[in-house]
Every structure is written in C-alpha cells, then in structure tokens.
Amino acid sequence: MERIPVAGPWITEKEVRYVADAAQNAWYANANVYNDRFEKAFAEFIGTSYAISLPSCTSAIHLSLLALGVGPGDEVVVPDATWIASAAPVSYVGATPVFADMDPQTWCMDPASLEACITPRTKAVIVVDLYGNMPDMDGILEVATRHGLPVIEDAAEAFGSEYGGRKAGSLGRTGVFSFHGSKTLTTGEGGMLVTDDKDLYQRCLFLRDHGRVPGDTMFENTEVAYKYKMSALQAAFGLAQVERAGELVGRKREIFTWYRSALAEVDGLAFNPEGPGVKNSYWMVTVVPEGPADKKAIIAGLSERGVDARPFFNPLSSIKAYAGSEQAGKARDRNRVSYAICPKGVNLPSGMNLDQEMVNRVCSALLEVLGL
Ligand SMILES: *Cc1c(COP(=O)(O)O)cnc(C)c1O
Image: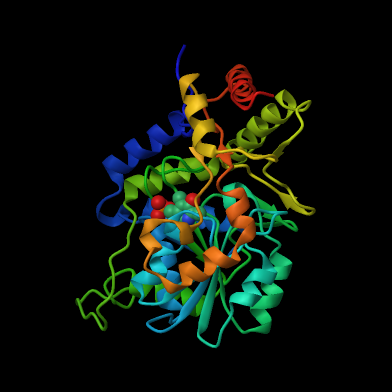
C-alpha cells in the first residue's frame, strides 16, 4: 500500500495558469503586478491595511524585530514549544530569546508565563499560533500592553484561523506567515508580513530592499540593510492560492473532522484544542496521549505501518542549538507544561491530498501502535 505523507499542498490548474502567465508576462512594466495583487488580496483576507511579500516567514520575523528597533542587549519572549524559525531571528538582531511556557488549554504561550518572563530588558513578544491553534490573545495582549511591549504574531501555521472573529495574523503589531510547501497556503517557499501600522510598513519596505527609500531609482542607499523579496512567479502562485483560501481552510477543517469521527469512541487522546471564540484551521492534526507515551516510538510504529508522522516540536530550551544559553537552562527548570506535552505529541498526516479512507487507515494504525 502507498505510504501516507505527513503534509503537502493542494494545487489546481489555476496555480499553473497564473505561474505560466507570470513567467511570460511579469517583466518590464508588469514586473510587480503579481506581487501587488497577491499582497492586496492577502491583506484583504487577513483584514490588515498592509502586506509585504517576502522570501520566508523567517525573514518576516527578522524584519519585524528590526523595524521595532530590537537589538543587542534586548530580550524577546518567545514560546518554548515552537519551530526554531520563531526564535532564530531574535539572535540575528543580537537579542536574547526568553522561553515562555505553554498554556495547556491552547498549546500556545501562557499569558502568566509571559508575565513572569518580562524583565526591564524585554523589548518585544513573539506569540505563535501553534498548529493552527490560537493562544489566549486577550490575556497575552493585556500583559503586553500593560508592559508597553509590541507583539509579533507568528501565524505561519494558522492561515485562516480566527480569534473573536478576527483572522490569525491580525492581532499583533505585525503578523507573519510562511508559504513553505507544508503550509496551508503555499508558494513553494515564501512568506508575508502584515500590519496596520503605516510607519512600520514603510520601515520594513526600506529594510527589505537594501536600505532604499521606496521609489529610489538613483541607487542612493541610506543604510546597510537586507534583501528580502519574493519573485513574481511565487507571487502568482500565491495569488491563485489566496483566491482559493476558503477551499484550502475548509479542506483542513474537514480533514480534522474525519479524524475526530474516526477516533470519537477512543478515550485518552487529546486533539488540537479550539477554544471559545476560536476557529482553528488545523494546519496539523495533532494528538497528545493523556497517559505516558513516547513520540519517537509512536512515529516509528506508524512508519512501520506506512504512515508518516512528525514529532510535536521539542522545547527550544531542550535542543542543542540553545544548549549554551543561560535562558534555556532557566526554561528547562520552569516550563513544566511544555516538558509534559512536547515529548508525547505527534502530528498526524494532514496533507491536502488526504481522503477519508486514508484518514481511517491512519487511525487504525494509531490505535494499534497505542494499543487502544
Ligand atoms: C514554518 C514556520 C516558520 C518558518 O517559515 P519559513 O517560511 O520556513 O521561514 C516560522 N514559524 C512557524 C511557527 C512555522 O511553523
């Protein structure tokens, strides 16, 4: 039987048509047409004033930190349990990541842990909408506002999720997205920064184009900066995808309901939470066994049965990349919830190519592996 992959996109004739058109026509006077259309459609979908298409989400976080003036000696609070891309740009600007614990209700940053991580050196907060889930944003924003801290919302995994009727990515000073091939909306590789803040928007445009004022044609760079642009071919691809946003998010939610109904009778498994007022776009269907469990053994057992799965992110404070960091040591002692959930959680196949029969196969394999 064919292996069931863990992630992958949903591509139609529309994407192919737009990219072919860009390859032929997005040059000369039309060089920016697809980037402009993609940014406009994306901002409209998210409900923000501005959007900037970028090569990755990592670059979007880097630009957010630069534009907010975060630099050497500053601290930035990030969740302990996330992909390293959420935190790595903090080091790019010479600042220090401080790892906050997880809220067991949301798997995202716990507002109380955020508050405990704040010091006089804290300059910003990066929250992550993990696997499509949303944090308690009222709690996060209350703490951040009281301390005068800007929030960067890493919505890389939450395209189409909503909190209180507002789209994921629109709740912080900036919101950042990834269009990596595994994400709900893809351009192969790519990213987007969204914001309502005009000054921040203009500063990001300047910083992402080698420190040129937009419109500069005389190569009069006024600062040494960065080169973070998305190609027209990727933008054409992304435009086709964002025009299909309803379909893409709808399929993700449908896949989740297939899992839930297949495992409805099974006790002892926690799934992605969907808090009150939240619409979860379920980037990755994720299960956390309530009893003791080892994600590596579960993944190996699924693999033997032809099912590809992924581990729940490791706490960043536990991985070699941060082994030398004093903050990681503190986080290891403090972050009880992250250290309870991360070793057990498994992301199940959530690719757009799944059908209900494949989901049933995954669920049978999972029950066998867990002995349920
Ligand atoms: C995928 C992902 C990123 C990184 O996106 P890139 O486009 O690969 O830079 C950042 N944060 C989270 C939470 C992600 O899942």
